[in-house]
Length: 186
Image (cartoon, rainbow, N blue to C red):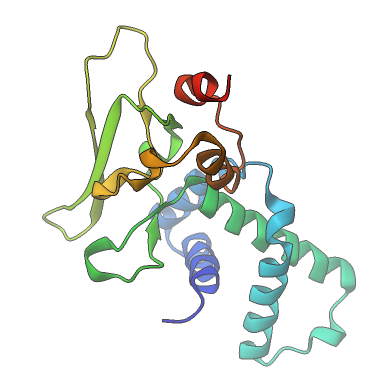
């Protein structure tokens, strides 16, 4: 339970403070795009920081304003990175606000007429894995694309008009310019 943004920030901090393998995950996360939408997460950054400071008994009034602002922005960036690159789904009963970042799949481009589909599965060790498969024949040199909103069996995004799809994707920091959107908006 609790605030999903607070959990995501705390997970990010655990990665940073963990052993070498955990720090490798933290470096991989740092390399992800923030989609240019950090400013949209400033309030979340402020709220998460204040919640953590209150829980630890720290006095915010005694902290230098530059440090507080730096922390707000850092948390906002992590939240933007998570939203831009994460894949939201109820992962094996983890809850509706659960999401995951995948090393390769989180870097795949979106298309509203994607040439690949994706789903989740559990590994024998109990980890969650994203499986991406071709949805049609793919020409040599053609980029592999996924529909960010149509994975794990949810295809309702495909039925939306171009403006509604684009509005949803703006939250990920981009204006969709896929072939389908360009044709529908012409």
